[in-house]
Length: 176
Image (tube, rainbow, N blue to C red; front, top):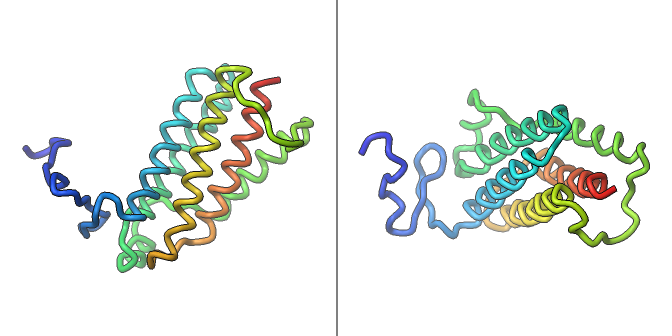
């Protein structure tokens, strides 16, 4: 079955990391990758609701960032140097800055955190809020990894935190 998605290698409850190491499907690293995959899907669900093509393109860029982040998380601790030397995209300080700038633009428009919101005023706002809470779950999974022996670069934590902040602002913008 060359090329099939059904490799059958996971039938016994393990899954493969990048570069071949196998771990249980409920391994904290797999939980983190899965949470970021869910976030990527949640971001994708906002795009059909967007009228602004620039924002749609920005969201697509964030999805590409998440693929890079998942790739980095999908390698074993022992393969981190190999991944760092690879051609794969990586989250950088510039990616964090891009999110900081986007937050700044929305805050300059008067959007600020002024207490808890009650989501659901619009479909787009709800979609952004779903992405936001998914980002926060992914952030928690990311921060659990060091307790399980997996180093997490600061840029990954910063990117995830800023993304959740941005998604909160985008949800509030969609509801006004």
